[in-house]
Amino acid sequence: MSGRTHARACPERTCVGCRERAAKSDLLRIVAIEGVCVPDHRGTLPGRGAYLHPASVCLDLAVRRRALPRAFKVPGPLDTAELAERLNQ
Ligand SMILES: [Zn+2]
Image (cartoon, rainbow, N blue to C red; front, top):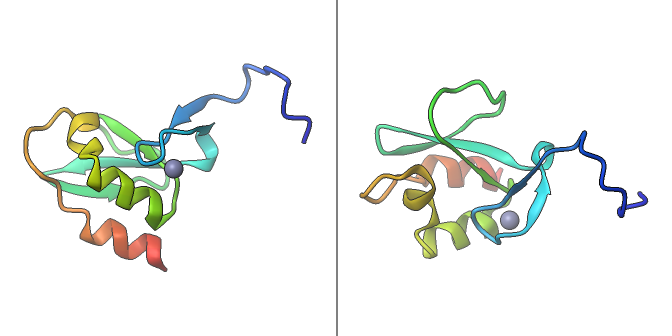
């Protein structure tokens, strides 16, 4: 990969865990449904999404920094157990 081409064809998002920018296609979109973080593999679920590397280290970081409630603009803690399980597979 050449790396330095600023092609606009590839949208970037920031991982809510490690805060690194990555191609949208390399990140997992997550939405919060009734307080539960749900992976949106097809990018079709409605609502505010957050982007995360599909790695449990990034989820850990996001949880520890309380980045997810902030990203979803919800006050309370979010259930990430199911999401963590998926990432550990
Ligand atoms: Zn990350």
